[in-house]
Length: 378
Image (cartoon, rainbow, N blue to C red; front, side, top):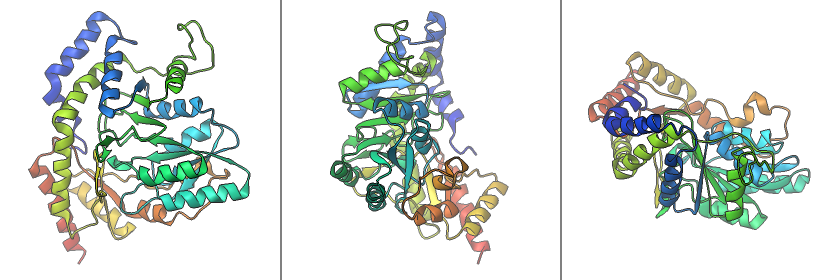
């Protein structure tokens, strides 16, 4: 059993993907081929945003946003404590200080209450300038942007939507990667929409920022690549990856997103009463980057993971350690508020196999194994 079965997806899409890759190989346009522009146009239209600028990976996408906003020394960037390292690493790399914020237990996303408390503490201390809120759409569900936007406007902060796991999610009819002043996503293979290597994208409605993003991603170019008007980086999406994504985006829209929601809903029904299942807020829609359950304790979580492995069922822990406890941030002034929910989640969370091509028989194996493990614990 695969945790996220990319092989099965490839077999389904093989004729189209092979054709598109072969076209790139035949024409030899490996860098900045027409497929990249085509993909950017399709992504912008899907998300409902004016500009989509692709880049080499999701981490670079975040970095490019911070570069556009000139985030650096003395700036405070508010980041959920329960998320992947890149969300806090990128502002720190620019010289800013990530300030960690707790999350909601039911959605795993940034807590508006903890966010506002952290902003107040930073302002009270007076050492850092509050600048940006990094709101992560964790495991596929968008963060609560209604509340986050109110807080951002109240304190004059920018919102950077980290939609690395959220592409395809939505609130009402508004899609993920459209909620931030700048929004980003990742096309890492295991993401809701993934390529066959690394890739990322940045979204914005701001024309000036879009122009800067296009410049920064190619060595700070001006009129052409040999006219360098600012210090930038080398972060282009390869044409082959764009070709793969063009095929996958069609499948994603036509059936994959609906199918993975059917698999997730069936998990909800089968696991009810056994474990704490994910919670999707009313009017929210998840793209299900992960299906993460909560066990009663760290001991029970670790025991279940071992039992599943013994029965040939893969699982993952996202995330075993709070961001605030990562060694890279020790000695930095990153912690302003208590982070009890994150501390607890890291001990109890476990992600189960999930993908759009998952068969009912595979899902039944997972659920049966959990049931048997729970029975053994009685």
